Image (cartoon, rainbow, N blue to C red; front, side, top):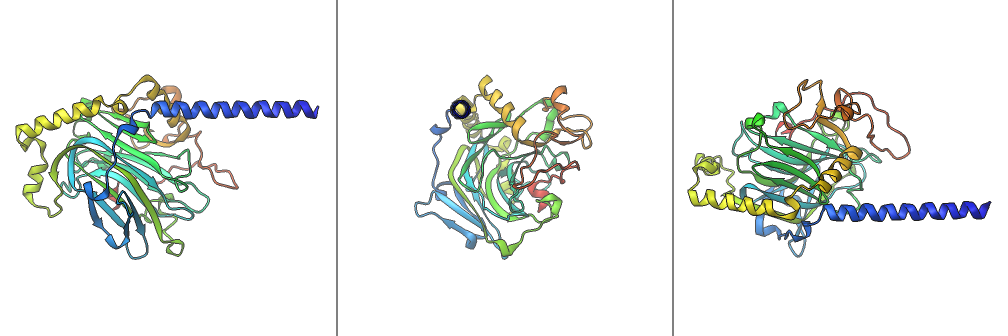
Length: 365
């Protein structure tokens, strides 16, 4: 009897190992092409934005540590605005009690277009000790923050134990968000989106800051600086796009005009169009049936909230939402998943109340 039980245990363990290998292999195939993207040193494409005293560069200049303490957060910005492109970073988040802490990797032109800015971002929302970080993606075009297209997820790994790659592909046809090379969200452009689709050149930002007013349970849990300082590390920095203009934060009207691609000279427009064609021909930019399946599986397992099923906020879904009647039944009317549950070590979580309000970096500021 004991021998039979032992044999069954070994067979099950072998099956688990085989499945794990298959999952890793499938993920590698989905992420194929990412390895061809070259990373850069910080000074090749970025400069400090704020809190430079809380910024530490690695000896080889290819990694940057940003720290939040009771005096300041920290952040950096790309040296140019880009009109479409592929932007990526490997990010390791601070551990332990991080309630109220926000780490972000995003594209925006809010420093230039204050009332009609565009924005694409990954926001990482800290949490209490033993509670998981949340990952949030946002899409805004032409100042459409009152029509937020937010989604929120758990991550299938510990983002504090090792760095993981987060990438944004932005083209004239679609926006794609990737986690470790796996597409996790696609926002296709449609005529019905009109100005809500990001269309003006954007800079790339990385920041860490105090989001106590909203980041963790709608502001219930604030940053506890006795648990700090809090440090996030960014490496494998990638900027692959068409530079539209050098960064200018002085609010000069000429800078605004430079950012309008339509005002650029014809050779510049042609060069950017050619750069986008090359970008979309890359393997990682091509959405295959295998990649779409991987994306669906990732979202089924990890998605906590989606605006597409939040009928309380939006009775009519956004035009880019791929609404599925069967899938809709797995979400509450406020857009939160009935199936995916935040994991809390030592206890179970059965929250039935609406999720915290979702806001953008610009709104939080």
